[in-house]
Each structure stands twice: as C-alpha cells, then as structure tokens.
Length: 285
Image (cartoon, rainbow, N blue to C red; front, side, top):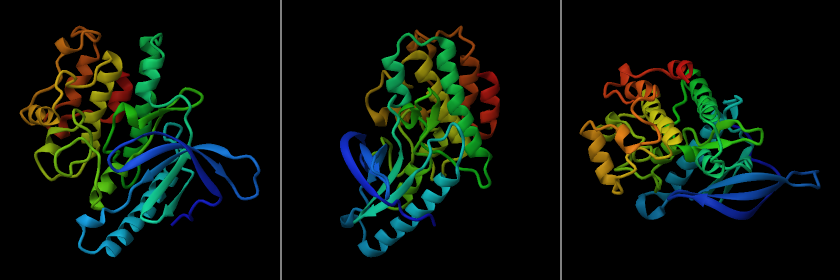
C-alpha cells in the first residue's frame, strides 16, 4: 500500500462535487518546502452509518478499498491519465489528491473556447481515447466505469487526461451513498450507460466503457449530451433499455451525413462483443 500523503493540505475553495464527494482547489505544503503546490482535492464522504449494520467494519472495508484504489491509480502512468499525488484519511472521509488543472474539465473547456476547430476537438477526444485504451490494455484491465466530459480534465499543455477511473465503481461496491444519476447501484451517468448495465447486475466492462465513449464523442462534437431533450433520468434509462439510441435529428451540429455517425452506431451496438475496441476508435479519430 502506498503511504499517506505527507505535509499539509489546505482547501481554498469548492469547485464541484456530487452525491458522494466534493472537489476543492487547494494547496499542498510538503514537509521541508516553503512554497505550496496548487492541487485538486477530492473529498469522499465515507460510509453513511445509518445504512450499515456494522459501521466500524464498513469503515475498515472502505479504507482498504480506498488504499487498493490508490495503488491502481498510482501505477496507471500515461500521458493521458491524470497523475495521482497521494491520499489522506480524515475521520470517516478519504481525500484523493491530484494536480490542479486550471483549464477545467473537457466540457467547460469546450464551452470556454467556442473557436476550437473540428480537428482540435477530435485531438482532445483522441487524447482521452488513448488514455482509455491504456487502461484497457493493463493486466488485469482497469475499467473506467464513468466516462463523460466532466471526468476528463485538460492539462496545462492542453492534453485531455482521464480522471476518476474506477472510483465510482468501487464506491458503489463499498456501500456508499453515491450521486450517480442512475437507477439502483449501476455505476455511470444517465445517457452514458449501456443497456446491459441497466437491465442486469453485470459489472462494467471495457465494452460498456466503449458505449460511454460513443456518448462522449457525440456530446463534444455536437455540443449536446446524449438524450439531451429528455430531462427525466428514469425516461432516459427506459429508452436505453428499450434499445433507443441518440438520433442525428436531435444533434443538428453533427448531421447524419457526418462520417462520425458510422463510428457512433457500432459504439452503441446492443451486443457488447460487437462494439469496437478503443484501438479501433483511435484509428477512426
């Protein structure tokens, strides 16, 4: 297990969060260093003691799985993976620390830069695809389980880097309250979840990541998330289970004549084994 992060972490402002965590901009002052380093601090809220019969055992299990997750993140080293700096436990919560990305996540970066060309957007998508291909190539593979624009950060040198891989999945398994906009304990976010995850107890796979990546491509290139016309999460879930796919008519900025639709359809194939690999997607991008 990697040791806990030394030094002092100071949260300087909340920048986001969900049902199971809050993200802060912060400063990390290392032992023996006068100047702090700006970092992102993700504080997970720990176990809800009202929902478990043995809070102490649940907390111990949460800490073990957190440490295991830090090993995975620490060892996942790639230009398109957000680096892991360390972790700390603070009472019932866990803090995961990574470099601060001043350019924000992919969706906010796209909104802030409407002048980006098609090729520039495709380059960022390819960056993310390379990171996901790397995770899938490891033995055993790492499944991200929550691919969406908000979980892809933009580095200072304008590279897309994956963040939060595996976090949502292990949080669900640890019996935590999550803020994922799903039904039951299915990891992921509505509109990016594959049919097989929604209608069964299957764990996320590399093919469910591919399904979500198709939604990522659509959202970035069209400016609208999958099923953006539908507001109710339950309605989106029912539509996907019924076999519905996003329609070109709902995404006028990515017309049906765009060759990317020839990639999106296979990404959303209802038969997981028939979906392309991330290597296939990179070749097209």
